[in-house]
Amino acid sequence: MPEKKAKKKKFAVADNETIEQCLERMKQEGYTPIRRIEEPIFHEIKRNGKLIIEPCGRKIIFEGKLQ
Image 1 (tube, rainbow, N blue to C red):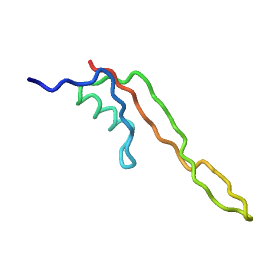
Image 2 (image 1 turned 30 degrees about the horizontal axis):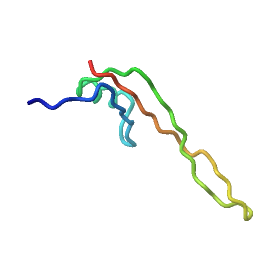
Image 3 (image 1 turned 60 degrees about the vertical axis):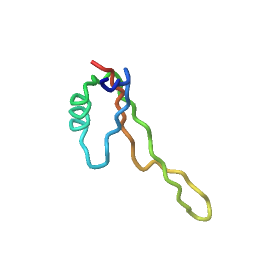
Image 4 (image 1 turned 135 degrees about the vertical axis):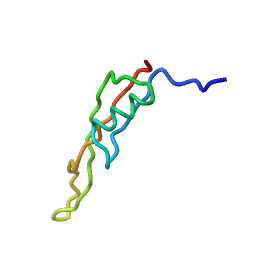
């Protein structure tokens, strides 16, 4: 019996991967991108005794629909 794939799947762009490479990976697995999600990444630092939360990057996630 063949493996059943999920109708929707999320693909995160890896640190060493371009957006185009992620989209190609989706295509190879049989998914079409339907939504792009960007989530901020924060880190905590101490300045003058105060804890400050600053953005330090972003995480890009594509939601794909099975073709």
